[in-house]
Image (tube, rainbow, N blue to C red):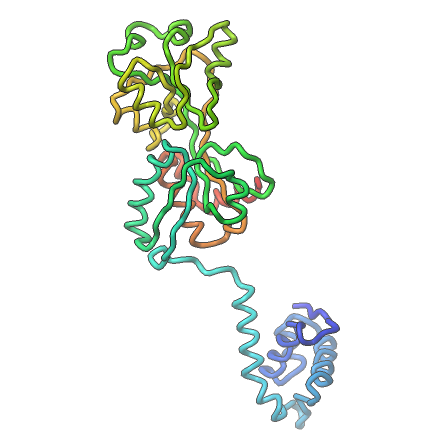
Length: 330
């Protein structure tokens, strides 16, 4: 340890550390070895302590040094200060989820929230029964809301770019055409022209009628008819299950394990049809403010979301590896 001089002894923690070592060792040489500094530097520090405290602290007695009454009175206090500094500057202790008593606020689209909630509740029941969750719709501007603490975590398609926000990708999905059982599109091969000729529902919380499917159709000089725009996928899928409307629904990428996000089409009795166009995959992740990165409770929350949404094949990475990559990428 290198002792750093400071003009103000009140805030110089090194002096307290040196005093503790000197009073414990009763020797300048041994105290210097304990703090990995030189005897000369420790001797200068002892002289400084003597001036500040106006007491010799250690005095020569034959071949050794003995503490003064003032030094004896200070010994336990100095040791307590050093222990406190050690606790203050040590990494935070790991959190036992069973002892958590808190509510986490997450923001997610309806499809993500409905897929996420059962897993969150089950893991909380087993590991952290004192934890509750508040799932908010995509109604807040996530960057500022994460920054000022209105949100603990955003889960979904992260489309905002804030320099300080930490983002971790969780799962990638492909979009397929979802139709009711017996829909005319289920008979015969699905072509871009047949897909464009059908009536569609678009999903956009901003009320947009167009998206990646429209761009892909336009390259073939095709245009689809969007009869209605809904703010969430669940409402769109429910509409498709009761009509001849076509909606887009997420499905696992070829070769990937299924995700809870892909269960809703089966539950509604929808048929998923491969779209004969090159559409970008949908990447879902989670975003949080960096002040929560090292917090034990928040780490448990992120790991719970990760275990709930990520495909089992992706679970080979430990949380430590994933968090390290997230920090490096931030």
